[in-house]
Image 1: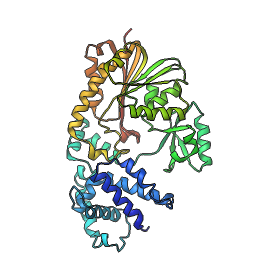
Image 2: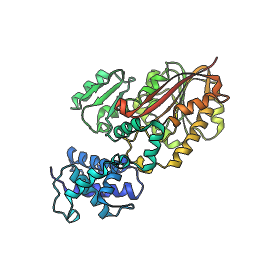
Image 3: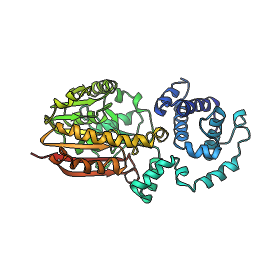
Image 4: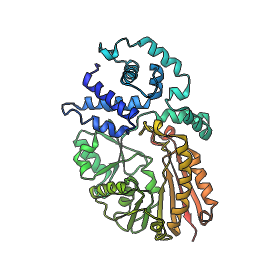
Length: 404
């Protein structure tokens, strides 16, 4: 277990880009992994995992290292030294790591771990909000679960094959997977691997999608031949899932405010062999009005705080601000009222978020059902999925039916 200079230098450069230049961790990691063609899989694994770990535990490591933002390179080295000591790496005699106080680091870790916001490495406001919304006991478990690295889950593209055939294909590539109980299309990787480089991915045999996220399309109860609208499609993970459940029959309208996201979805749909999707940019209210009372099924995968997917996006802990959450709640109310009008009488609506906060979830649904349009809907059921209970991302979904 030895630290290699070029790998550590790349890690420090990457942390500088994330912490000081506001770049997104996933983009920075993807760039870092292309830096040296001579690196083997264990080198790339070290770089990716170390960057993500230091991002995840930024507050804890910074407080142990006694450094404050903005972090200069010496500060980043001190945080790296904390990571290395706590992970049990022997400290090499490099100039940047001279005088690393190993005993002091371990002592400060024990001391600082007594405060939850520092131990779980989150801003104070986030800890207070979590306690207020979920209660001390549930929040403590939830934030601890959100700090565990996310498993890699695949969703079989049933337009191109079965879960069993996909598993065998991956087995031939030495990628071992396991089935997931009650999940008809999911496979879990036993060990992390870059599945995006496989021919199986390039041929569109699967998508990478969290297990709880995979439940949303089925919850909406889409069937072949229906007219279905995904109102906040984004890059379209759930859109593609609905296309496969519809067996490419019927009409699936993918809408988003951003053309760039729909362009991404078009490429993914082509790879998936999903050809019943139409793309519409929401550039005016007319786009929505034209669809009033026209759809059998509507999915509102609403913009949210993302407080259910911190294990997947640890840098969002540091980018998220309390005022963003206040604003996003207003947006959620507006999209629910506006987009629900697309559902035809007798049709169904699912409102979903990747947040664990009741104020973004069941409280939004309760408020909606009291509005003029909301009174035309019957609440059927909802599901609250916590990372601490499922081991996957935190999600919420509510199913409603428009009265005939």
